[in-house]
Length: 117
Ligand code: AMP
Image (cartoon, rainbow, N blue to C red; front, side, top):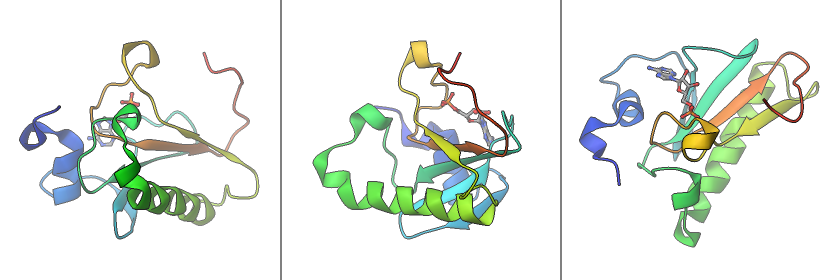
């Protein structure tokens, strides 16, 4: 497991590293990705550190539900709830997971290709 004292997204959640925060919930924080891949690209992260999507357990159910509701709220606020958006959770090297703190990418605002590259 990642040392949470050395976790970038834990630092953003704590407010010790700056980020463009767009929404908060009981269990999550949403902020803009610094390297956006689409007109809307927001990351939704749990306040409590979880390494990645494959580290989620049944005990995290309430946190996960809260994050999905937060992602929907972000999509609505960003104006892509009706046009459509993608939720992505990368796990591991082949998926290019670069920050070891669970996050949902909320991506939209343009036609997204499928399958992803
Ligand atoms: P992943 O590749 O799924 O682990 O996604 C990590 C994402 O975090 C990438 O899209 C990065 O652009 C983004 N990112 C890295 N550092 C920051 C930061 N300080 N603030 C906001 N987004 C970041």
